[in-house]
Length: 234
Length: 234
Image (cartoon, rainbow over all chains, first blue to last red; front, side, top):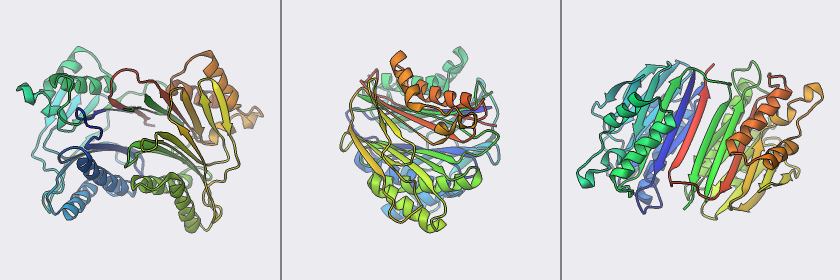
């Protein structure tokens, strides 16, 4: 079995700084966690908030703290720092090799999608962003790691796209169409969702957009861990 | 212009845990840093050491601390924690968008390679790993970010390969051959160096091996940030 993780991320049009922050961190007991945060508003202030949240979460995860506890701690820290006036969404997806599960934590009104082969479940239970109250907790879903599983998570820039023109993006339909027509790689799926959103905004994204796709599949080839990263410079 | 970063990483044969740790972290003033550490010996103890060093370094970098200061701090922390009895190599490669430079910090007897198109420089100034004395400092090289620049850095597993059979790997020659024959992508270069090392060890790596290749090139296509990660599960 192998896990593939793909990320596609673009800034709001004409904005040099993204309010979204994404980091991947190794878990001390095996596996890794993808941490994605979107700070309220955009630009430098939002970036500082999302970096603070992600830094707090990855620091705790690296010490072996459980995902739910890390999310609560980040919420309380943000609430204390900003007196409850600034919110930040948070998604954590962890490949946990201690339990052989995929653990999804969500503090984000935007849903996440869980696909088993081409069957899609939309996880849209009510979920509050971090920092707005004292008692914030994440919605947690734990799934067995097994081939055929695909997870899609994103920041709200994806669902905001097209709203300006009254044609908001239907993310579930877009994923369904991709999965039915072909067997996309995680990178193709992430790129295609992002491109769809950018198109709906006429090539000028109205918000920062980050899309993460995680796929579990039968192992294909060697046992080398690989990472590839592309950073366009303005 | 765009920066591409590729990593290939494999465990020592029959070892479920790698003593090498690699993380990528966003810099608070723009750009990112790749942090690679190799803890002394192998297995669980080495992993704990390299994770401790990398966690210390990325925590400091995320706060805006300069690379050299972060390396010194990690060395002092390791020295204090292990009374100078455990060493750990450290390489940091930072794409610094404040200064538009690539900053390379090395606390590793293994060299790094800097290639301008197909001309290769071997950076092998004496350099001590972290944690063995009080006054450890990194060797720092700062280069202008410009297309045609390729950096290769790795943990010593790469150069140890083949030693068992008296045929140690000549990394410089292997890079030269790749760069002259073709225009490899960073992933092809990293994969090929790793595969070469594994071959020299008859498919059973005698040590953990991590290879990082960073390439600066003219921008090709859109302005989307992308990341792709592959994690084989045993």
